[in-house]
Image (tube, rainbow, N blue to C red):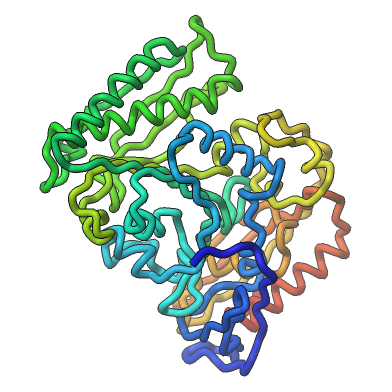
Length: 439
C-alpha cells in the first residue's frame, strides 16, 4: 500500500501482563499506526520511540543530505522507475521468505527485528518490496525507504536508517542476452575514458556459483552488467569529492560475498581518504524470487546500499544521530543537489553513567533489549552504550551485567542533575519492564 507521511499514534489500551515475566509488564492490546488499529501479542516489541520515526521519511525532506544523495543516485539511472513511498509495514513472509531467507536466519529473531505482532513487522531492508515491484511489471527500478533493525548504540548505528534498492531484469532468452551484451559494450566504452581503477573478481566461481537454473554465459553477462553499472555510479558519487584525476584515479574493488537472495553475490569497496570503505552489496537475483514474483522467464541483478553510510563519508558527518537533528545549525549547512562538508558547530561534554544489575533467572536479556529501553527513555542524547562487565555467579548461576551509558547532546550541554534524572528513569524501567535486580 502506498502511503504518505501522516500523524502517527501508538497508545496504550487494555494493558495486560506478559506470561513468564517476573514482574507485571503492561503491553497495549492494540497499536494505532497510520490510522489503522493492529492487535499486539507476545511477539510485539516495537517501542514508542521507534513508532514516532515512521512518518518522518528523511529521504524525502528537501535539502536533507539523504534526500540529496537519493536524488543524485536516481539521476544516474534516469530510465529506472524511482519509488520512495512504500509502507514500512510488511509481513515476515514478505521480508524473509519471498527472498529465500533460511528459517533459522538470525534476522527473523525478535532480538534483531521490530514486530507489530507475529504476522506484521517493520521492514528490515528495502528488498522486502522486490517481489511486489517485479510483479507489477517493472523491469528496472530504484526503491528508497526507511528500514528498521534493533541495534547497538554508537556513532554509526541507529535503529532506523535508509536504504536504496536498485534492480534490473532482462528476458531470459537470446534477445535478452543480446541486450545485456550490447549494454555491457556501451558501459565498457564509458568507463575506459574515466579516472577509475577497478580490482575485480571473477563474475562466477566455485565459491561464488552460478545458480543451477541459469545459463553460465548469461549469468556472467548479467554479473558484468551489474559491475559496470555500479562502477560508473560509484565514480559519479565519490570522484568529485575525492578529487580524482588521471594521476589519482578512484580505486574500487569487488569482493565475493554471500546473501540469501542473490548468487553470485558481491560487496563493493572504495578507497577513500586513505582507507577501504564498504559501500554496498549486490548480486544476481535468485531465480526463486523471480518465480514468486511471477516473472519466471527473466534474469537480472540487484543491489542495496545504506544512504547514511555513504552520506557520512561524503558529507563528513561524524555521528549518525545528526541526520535526525532539527537544529538549524545542522540543516542550514545543506542545499538540494550539492554535497558539502559538514562543519561541526560544537562539541558538548560527555556524562557517563554506569548501571549494574542481575538478570532474572527465567528471562534472557539481550543487549538490544537494553539499548531499546535506553533509546525509549533518553532518545538521541545518548551517544553510545557499552557493556563493560559481565559474569555468572558460581553458586546461583545468575548473570550480572554492567553497561556504561554515554550521555552527550549534539545541540547543548547537559547538566549532571538532568542526566541523573534520566538515568533514574532508565533504572526504573529496567526493573519494571525487564525485571532485573539493580546491584
